[in-house]
Amino acid sequence: MEKGTSLENKQLPAFTARRLTQTTFLIVEWDDIFNEHPFIYAKIVPSTNTILIMDTGCGGATHNPEIGLKSLREFIETVDVPDNNGKPLNEGGKMKYIVVESHCHYDHILGVEPFATDSPILGSSHSPTFVSPENFPANSECKAQGLRTPIYELTLVPHLHEITSSSGLSMGLTVLHTPGHTPDELALWDADEKMLYAGDTLYEDDPIIFPTGGSLPVWFSTIDQLIELVKTQPDSDNVMINCGHATALRPALEVLRTCRKFMENVVSGEEPLKRRYLRRGTWCVEFKEDKGRFSLICPERLVLEAKGEAVA
Image 1 (cartoon, rainbow, N blue to C red):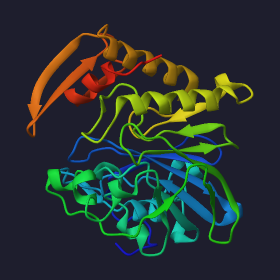
Image 2: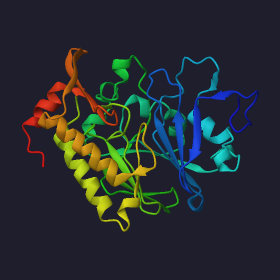
Image 3: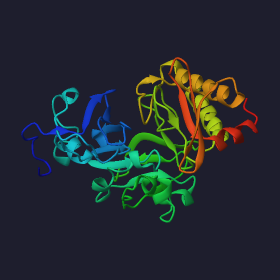
Image 4: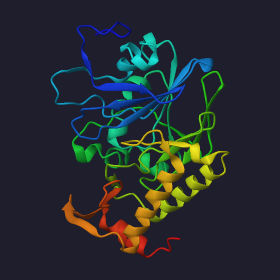
């Protein structure tokens, strides 16, 4: 199907989209082969003629023979969305793109290449070596998954970077470095909509999975900073959080504080171990609340290291 054409023969897309706020849509890759179901966010700012995409998912990889439209960009430009007055989010590709990576893991970057041909791709400058060309295949987990690592130019931006369009107009979004899950994790703060986009820093109902490069002490520091950010906002209880999986448009303070308490219980030993197992030569552990809202899977070393840290 050619770019910009209407959807023919009801070709089933790998994505669905629904409106979260006046400017923001949640796009879900609903049947990927990795069972990740990543959350992708599109913020449309007509005054800048730009649409910001946070993360690009698994690239449409699926075993479902009914899914024929696998390109995120093609979906955004050609598929009618009921919540968008029955029109595509960026009909015909009229608006420009800015893509922001919450972090470099494969399930958030495999759809990036079609955007990289003409759009900036932004990532965290907190740990340049983590996303350097020589380390990228391993740290993105593409190598472990047997995947071709996407090739694109990544522009590293600092903490508190204000995102602007190609013409220099504000997109109303600020980059926050939020390491812990990975060294390159970042979040976005939307001051206009009072929303926090937290990537894989945390989420509900699915296991929060830390790689070997993660750090629980650093994660606690990040969570404390995000809690303080939200607390300083007027009407802070109405600030919402959007995450890289499972959680969207939920009360930010409640989610952040409750997840932090769960992680405290893991480190203190109050949360019982559910499973210990060997994965790729590394001992991993799993913790899960009985009610199932929060759970953690990570290398055992990360929990042991955290036990040696003071967690307030």
